[in-house]
Length: 301
Image 1 (cartoon, rainbow, N blue to C red):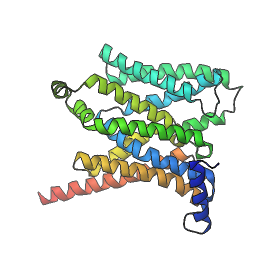
Image 2: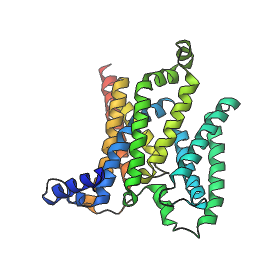
Image 3: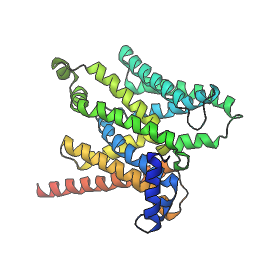
Image 4: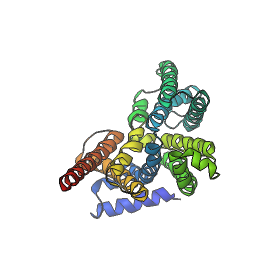
């Protein structure tokens, strides 16, 4: 019996053969990557607005780097090296929550705490990776670091779909409260908003989204897809609604174009790298628009 994903792949293959869709859509891995791009694009774009607002860019990078240690631990524990999700989610969630707890308790600056935890995680991961290098093909780790659409399977898509639904169901109703807690924690507290709870909830969202996106974007580059579309949106938006809408749009387009274009041009590049390069084009374009707008304003004055 065909699964839901099989039906989509059959549909796309048919329309690709008759010329309605690009020829590359005949291949299952391309359809898989497009489906993932349509999920992580809006998700990372929407959450990225909060990452930029809360100044958590370095945090998302630390979680992405910690994922490599989670993979190594999973291999040692006997998980499949292609999808060690139990160790990935377990280690990264623990890493993120303990890091945030330490930051709140010690009152040290965020960059100091994140730098310390990131260094410890990478050091531990390097030691564990040295042990597992004889057990697995190290090319698998390259896929985790930089993303690879060739390795995406139904399990990866199911994980990403579940995470997307959960985060959207939780994050959208609480978005305004999280935003107020970011801009003015004291006012949010007076209005009965549980600032600390929302902070830990948001940290948890960043962590699980990062882990679920690894196969497509990669551990090294997933942080960039949180930041660059949101930064591009900030260049041209004049309201929070516009900020959110533009960020989601730029992120989604970056994922789709970054996946499809290398296939159509037969360029053998990692999917994560291609996606971030497209996002960078949007950032440069919006930065030029903003600079041009500032010059016109100055000239009018």
